Amino acid sequence: MSRFNPFHRRACLAAISLAFLAVTGAAAVHAQSYPTKPIRLVAPFPAGSGPDANAREIAAELTKILGQTVIVENRPGASSIIGTDVVAKAVPDGYTLLVGTTTSMSVLQHMYAKLPFNAERDFAPISLLGLLNTGLIAHPGTSFKTVQELIAQAKAQPDAVNVATQGIGSYSHLSGEWFGAGSGTKLKFVPYNTSSPYSDLLAGQMNIMFDGLPAAAGNIRAGKLKLLAITGKSRHPAFPDVPTFAEAGLPDYAPLAWQGLLAPAGTPAAILEKLSAAMQKATQNPVLAEKWRQYGGELKATTPAEFAAFIKADSAKWGQVVRQAGVKLD
Image 1 (cartoon, helix red, strand yellow):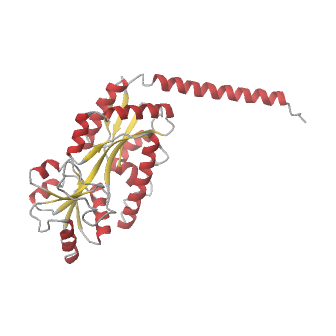
Image 2 (spheres, helix red, strand yellow):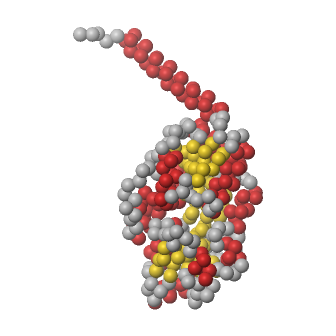
Image 3 (cartoon, rainbow, N blue to C red):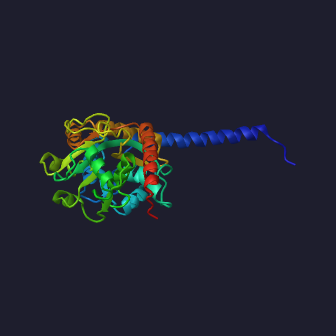
């Protein structure tokens, strides 16, 4: 029988400690010199779309700050699942990042029993990019002029109010379901899976739509569409005459569309902090900040910990909405 050798044990522990220090030391050096080559920013939506424009704007700012080119790579498809999965399976070295959204990080896991990635486990949050308040957008010819008038009509004539959405399970659809549950109304949702619903909304073939305001802001200001209410704790400075949903009697109606930066899980914390600090600087660009304000939003950066807590809380809200609506896509 072999005898326990304390000197051998101490030697093993010393070797393990040295190996650990070597690994952590190398990681620290890597993080300190990061980045040393271009960074790929995966955008899981089509080129030329609003979210793509936001991604390219922030990529340009990060390029200036980090001293390396940040290249936007569009990977649209399957409700952002394709592009999101690319980053989930990427090497966690800080050179492949994701533009995450409400849909990809807070909603999908509640609608699909099986996804190729786990939103909580497979990603490391870096920072928010920006928030978009949700508006109740209506055709000017509708008979109702306020949220309460809409609710009264929907209760008196169930299914009479047509609501345009960008597809079953889309942000606009689930925002409408949230409104229906909170107001005790039954609305008729019309999905536009492969085309924009705004043409029919402008033509008066659709009554209303729940959505972020980038695509509608211009037509709202031109009087071609009207904004009945907007989410937020207080009135938005870009639409000071528009009441909040809380003012309209729905204080718990609070859907927010957002974008943020994430990395594959396992990315060194020092790199995440460096990218978060870069986002703090990037979001201080006054031109970009004013763009977000003009369409009812807010350009905003956070720490990794703050962003992780934000996603967790947001996912819980959308999970309840999805369950109440009974939306399942597989």
